[in-house]
Image 1 (cartoon, rainbow, N blue to C red):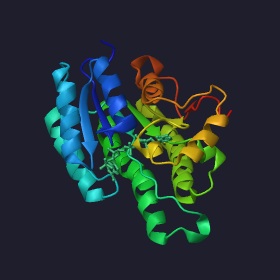
Image 2: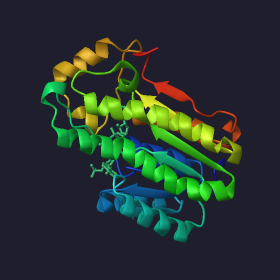
Image 3: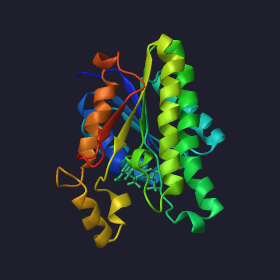
Length: 246
Ligand code: NAP
């Protein structure tokens, strides 16, 4: 098994894309830490994975709160002893046209989507630097590159992730730590199920491959970056969007 003996933490790993990423790593034999703001859902996901024969633990974590992040990483490291892969997946939307966007919704989205990546990467790097090995994979979005009406806060947070990923890649390359991003397009999850049928049909017209992406499409790209074989690829973005942005 390609990742047997490796420890992987997935933030927002209880459901949606994060859960699919966790399942992908489980299929490669890794030990999983499911870190999510909903402990109950994280425990359910960890229990499902454990039934498949891998070690999986749930950790209660709000990525936007530094004290919470330190506690969760300490807890996880105490139990697992190492951390090989961090997938910064937790993210939310609070949409609204710029003129009507509330400051609190700006702060909330930037706090979870961007500051959360900073806080979790910082904790992960402390151990990865000592190990002289690590993979950090950040989940961005196609809207970081295209923009999207109604998503000023979300697109800014995801564009910020791209800069943060490249800087992380440059700062820690000399410790054999890579940092890369996956930028999904329109993926079928609870986040996109919440959109109206009209918007969904409009989006579909803009996708050359003619379908919405699946959570597994994203998980496959994340697994690529996480592979020990791909240690010479850093600061890069894989676009998983069916061709809607090229
Ligand atoms: P999702 O179904 O809403 O799942 C997000 C997960 O993150 C949930 O388990 C959620 O917990 C958790 N979470 C929310 N806030 C958190 C916090 N502060 N700390 C820790 N965990 C938190 O979303 P998704 O569609 O799978 O999206 C996953 C990632 O992909 C996000 O970064 C998103 O921006 C990105 N993305 C998604 C799409 C798409 O089309 N779906 C496209 C591009 C990028 P709760 O259940 O309690 O909310």
